[in-house]
Length: 414
Image (cartoon, rainbow, N blue to C red):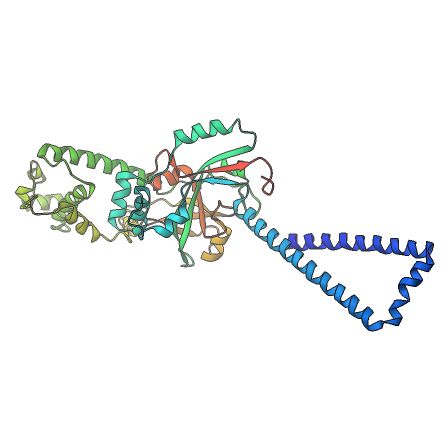
């Protein structure tokens, strides 16, 4: 607002200077040609009403024209300033149409496979996690990004590119209890702050590389374990003649074994042996021996129904509770929060915020409040995290979903 006030004051000074020049010219003409001055001024006392109307009309028309011009300039400058504040030095974003995808999810039966994958993640439940574990999120391969970066190095109109991940999420502050269902993850590499000028609200440099990693490693390990189990299960199923085994079928089998084990609750391994529960007996068991006829039972539907009963909304809390019994917990990583997010969530530096990956809330500590946290910073709360952390959380190993481009010049002229 101060910038707009200074801008208006500068225009007023220029106009006053122009008026002073005109008055000086008229005064000089009056001194050199007094007859012309008398002829021009004698009509004022002769026709006072008309003279007043003429002056008022000219004044009113001048006010209308100047008001329209100043309003247009003010709106133009305000919109431009807000865009520059949000985007910073980002001039183009090469990415899928994120907002259009969000508005069409769940209502378009002809959605592409990439849109369907994002819809599965936002839908919640076990199906979304299984879909991510099997397919991951769509994105741009890092090899393709490296090729693009090499090509733009010779482009004189571009002075910077950076990889990033922009993804919608739910953000909740544990201290204030405030939550926002429409937020974003903005993940960048360690070169981004220097290239695009990311600063905290105190004017300090943002250290993305120094952010403490969080639950990303946990997700990466889970992905590797799930891949091993899936591949092993599919190999066993192929030997049994079930070549069309899906992830839901594998999860159903794992859940069935887990349910069988938990039927004998609060018992040690010795107690299981006393109950004659021998895991070695599971070797060689097929579906017929379990009383399931694959000709009459829809395994996909059965697996979906079984997994839909799993409530993953409290999974993060339950994991912390179980690990807490042995003195462990899901590690709290660090993130930066944008100014708008801090205002909406009533968050402060040091607060723990929960970032939802599908239905699972993951804890992160607010390292600082920043301005210009990517292209979504003016619309919604945004958390800034390292690119590698987001790749692990969203199962996007060696992939990104947007490329940020900065044109030569400053934030206004670029």
